Every structure is written in C-alpha cells, then in structure tokens.
Amino acid sequence: MEILVATFNRHKIDELRPLLPGHRLLSPADAGIDPMEIDENGSDYFANALIKAKALHDKAGIPTLADDSGLSVLALDGAPGIHSSRYGSLDGSEKLSDGDRNELLLSVMKQVDERRCAFYCCLVFLYGEDRYIAVQETCR
Image 1: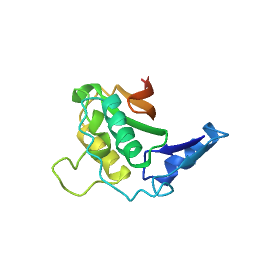
Image 2: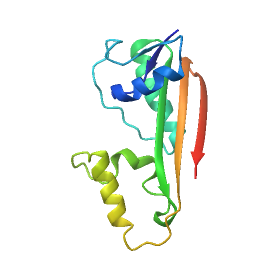
Image 3: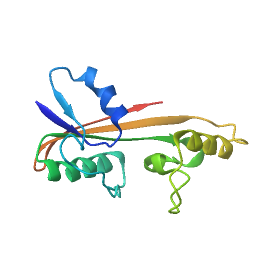
Image 4: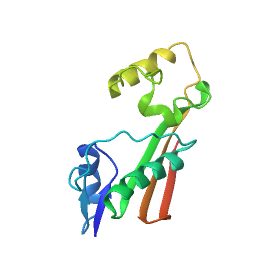
C-alpha cells in the first residue's frame, strides 16, 4: 500500500520505513505536493495530527499518516505542550532549531526543582474522507 507521510521532514519518513515493511511510504514531494504551511490550530495533539492528515490527504487522495507530539512540563502548567515545535517563536519570529528550543526550555527551568514532564505522541492514519485510526501514547 502507498502511504503518504504528512511531514516535510525526510528523516522522519526514513525512521518510519522499517516500522512499516511492505508499504511504500511517500513524502509529500514524492506525491507531487509542494511544501506548504499547515495551520495546526487544534486544541490537542489528536486535532493537530488530524488537521495535518486531512490537509495532505485532500491534496493527494491516498491514505495518509500524520503525527503530532510534544513535551508537557508539569511546573510550566503543561507548556510547551502542543506548541513544542514552535516553542520560543510563537510571536511570529523565526522558528528556533531543536537545540535552541531545548536551551530555551532549560533556561526557563533553571531555578525550577520540579522537573516532571511527559512526552505525548498522537498518530492518525486517514484512509478515506473522515475514516481514520488514531493512537495516542504518553511517556512519563
């Protein structure tokens, strides 16, 4: 089965290939889709993953796998949460690198002793209009 992976990050697709043997994983570029901004304006990981899946499924018309994930820090009332990939640049400034976001979070947490957190990941496999399978897991 051909599966469109809803990411413009080739590394993420390479990581998924061994997990889905027997399926042909396509990047958006492989499916003829130009890079595009997807407004992830959902209120949780599931909503954002579904938004991404629908946006690319609508363009390609083939089964689409999308994810959304993030880190939720208890002492920061759950931040950065669903905004993890945009942490430090929500004001419209240039998006920070992974390393810069990590450094920012560590600097914010510098004087904080309570460091419990959780990593959330939601996968949505959209295989038809409003037909999907969703899985969300948490690592604490």
